[in-house]
Amino acid sequence: MMLLAAVAFAFFVVPLVGLAVRAPWGEMGELLRSDQVRDALGVSAIASVSAVLISAVFGIPLAWVLARSDFPGKSLVRGLVLLPLVLPPVVGGAALLFTLGRSGVFGEPIYEATGLVLPFSIWGVILAVTFVSMPFLVITVEGALRNIDQRYEGAASSLGANRWTVIRKVTLPMIAPSLVAGLVLTWARAIGEFGATITFAGNIPGETQTLPLAVFLALETDRDAAIALSLILVAISLIVLVALRDRWLPSR
Image (cartoon, rainbow, N blue to C red; front, side, top):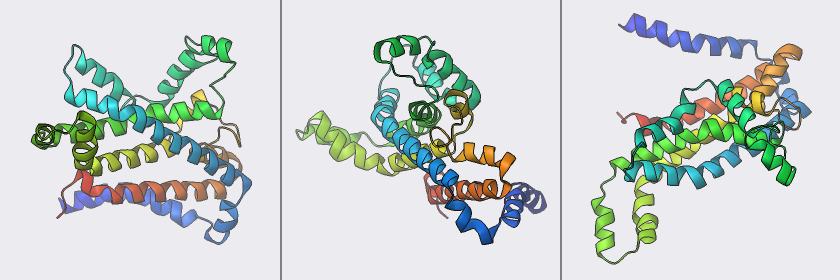
C-alpha cells in the first residue's frame, strides 16, 4: 500500500521538481520584473479581485436560496450553477462568446444600446473568470449554511432581532470560516483560469493577457519566462491548498 501511495505521490511531485530544476533561478528577479510579467500580473489581479467581489455580491445570495429555499426544479438550478466546475473551460468561453459577443444573443443589443464590446476586453476577462470561479463560492457557502445549527438563528429571532440582524450577527459569523475559504478558492480559480479567458477575451498583451495566458505565449518565445510564471502560479496554488486544508479535512 505504501509503495502504491509513493508512486501516486511521485506522479504529482515529479513534474513540479522538473519545473524547479529547469528554473533559471539566477535570472528570476529580472524575468519577473519584465513588462510582460508586470502587465499580465496586473490583468490577473484586476480580473481575479473583480471576480471575488462579483461572486460575493451575487454568489452568496444564490447559495442562500439553494440552501434555505425549496422550489420546483431546484436540483436543475443547482446543477446549472455548478456546471462550470466540470464543464471544459473552453466550452464556457464559447458559450459566453455566442451569448455576449458583439453579435451574440444578448451582446448585440448591449452593444447597440451602449457601444460596449465585452469580448477581447478586460470586461471579457472578468466575465470569463467569474463564470468559472463563482461556483466554488456557491458550493462552499451552501454547504456551510446547510450544516449550521439554525436554532441559534431562531433564538435570535425570538429575542426580537430582525432578519438582517440575525444574518449579520448570527449567520455570517457562524459560516465565516467557510465563507473565507470560498472567497479564497474563488480567487485562486480566477487567477488560474485559461480556457474560457482565451476563448472569450483573447490573449492581448497588456489588455487581456493574464498570467496563465502569458505562460502559454512564453512557451513559444521565452521558455525561462514561462517557467518563472509557472512557478508563481504553482506557489499561489500550493499556498491556498495548504492554508485551506482544514476546511476540507479534519485536523489530526
